[in-house]
Image 1: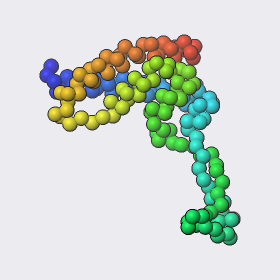
Image 2: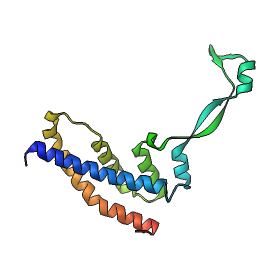
Image 3: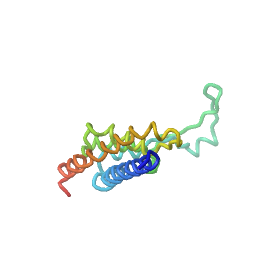
Image 4: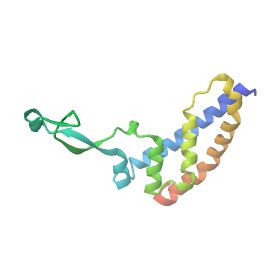
Length: 153
């Protein structure tokens, strides 16, 4: 197998492992742990909402800009707009991903999303092979920890 063929194969492995990590983490966050305070904090943020009755009848300036009366209200983020890195951090807070592996999982996911120019493939292949091996060797302890923590298989 030449370098280009090997690169495609390794890239495919990385995509598969990263997708497994992503699926397991997302499924647990919004399945088993959907009511956990860390998941609530992950998917919610506060936004300013203008108070309609006051906005039309009052006028004020602040530092030269028009000011409006507003309130902070909770708003839900779309799940696909939450970065995977933040999902991994939340999984660590919840307790089903070990902090020891969190950065490796994030790096694998980031590597999955990189697009390489053909001439970079040769330079990148060694990094990707190591990441693929690491993803393989981390999968069993990753899943075993989840089974231990959640009590399910």
